[in-house]
Image (cartoon, rainbow, N blue to C red; front, side, top):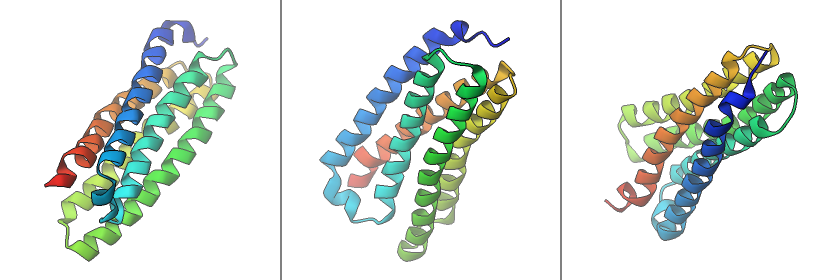
Length: 164
């Protein structure tokens, strides 16, 4: 049996932290919008970063809602799919920018790898929850931590690196 109650504090914290970080990304966008729009790949990168944070927020809220674990798993998979679409768009635009601006290949490849690394734990967690495995919550937690780390990187790029 899945004991969601043991995870309640963690996912409550995740909901608040993800909303705060999403706000930081919006501030970065508003402060540096002219610079960001000069590079075709940065709006998609910002959208993917916000999408990943919204995945944490909505998945955390879904965990906190009283419902069967299988429904939770289905919701997480659906939310992950939507966020993954933003990651795919960001990867596509990153590739185009790499060719257009002669960006180093490792930058483009790392954006793709990190984007996918954020989504994979949520997908695994969703599947595990559907099957009734408690480990699904641990996978969601791992995904949240991964997104937090990489969202701070994205916020840094949109706030500081864009001005270099």
